[in-house]
Length: 76
Image 1 (cartoon, rainbow, N blue to C red):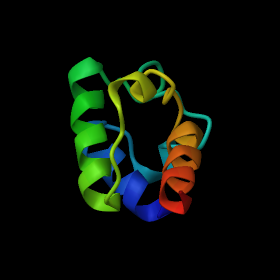
Image 2 (image 1 turned 45 degrees about the vertical axis):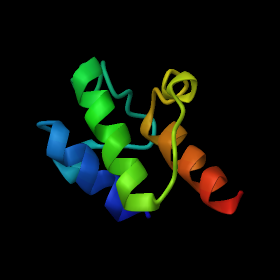
Image 3 (image 1 turned 90 degrees about the vertical axis):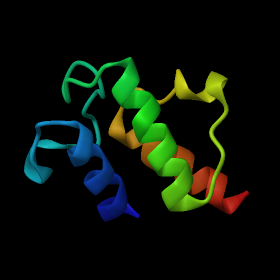
């Protein structure tokens, strides 16, 4: 799962795999804007077969938040 998340994030960010850390903030560290985040969420939904409600998107501010959220959704 880790590799899939990083690959999706690298598609939207100019950061390399080594520059993306679990504590990286999507906007301040990876330079993503709100349109990027919408694209990323769509890619996560498709890649992992989950649904991410709009109200949950606001809670996904770091890479670690995303990993934990997807693990939780897949375990549900």
